[in-house]
Length: 77
Image 1 (cartoon, rainbow, N blue to C red):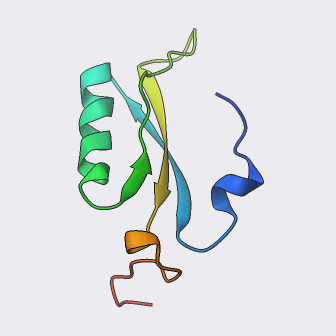
Image 2: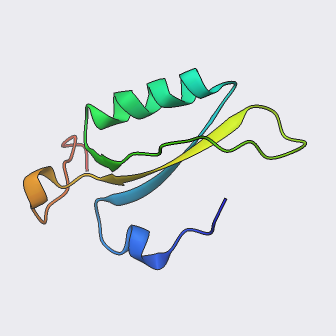
């Protein structure tokens, strides 16, 4: 997979998540769960690295609701 760019995590509330799963169906199910909670740049395909088990899927998340500057918080911090 490509390197994570500084722009992907340029401010609080932006995150990169890499999912490792046995198969495409599982990886995309995780993507759907995350998409229900926050804005994501969804992946269209998984990647299989030769010699490694399973597949990987990289997602880019934005925890800012409706473009607000303050990320969503669980209130714990």
